[in-house]
Image 1 (cartoon, helix red, strand yellow):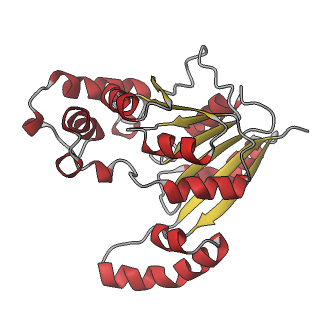
Image 2 (image 1 turned 90 degrees about the vertical axis):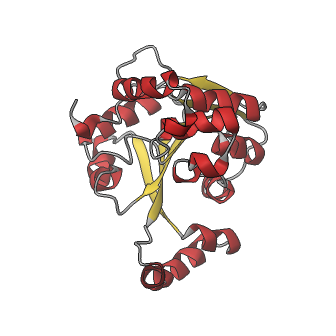
Length: 256
């Protein structure tokens, strides 16, 4: 297997097998999300599972940002792809109160956990696979927050395949929302302008997102982004680590 392709559905399923077959929780590698998910399913242990490094457990700000940018509750059928443990899916259900909300993820342990914990949402254990011609996504909003492959490869071919797959059955006027670290060379960001030209029937918009903690307290996204621009270099010195730039990409299927 090419190491660059570790994120592809067939390779992820193969990788997950070792975790499904290992019942010794102390041996599980929590740096791998499958190990983290198994510990969460069995023990619901936030600390020892290290789940914070794999899932956003407080996604309220991101979901509210989606609502503010898209506007209102006009979406009736929403799919959260790569939903993991379902925390973002659950938040979508609380914000888009009139919609039917589903989450989908390749991990069996994650979906078992989500189905048990968040009963108001529907959860599906399935890989998003552009090669699966039977997969239909007739939703009017699909969220892809830090979803492979948009954040794990700079392959234009794969980005085209996944955007095509997720939008081909989307309802007119519907949107695919991609939330990701932007200053990541192995991501959709390097192909953004080419993708815009390739999908001439889709409307692409990119929105700068502030540092999450700033955005949580300052309701104006533009003001929060402005403050974040000045704070990033200061925080980089204080924390001695890079403070990434995030963007939200909204890809809309025009109703015209």
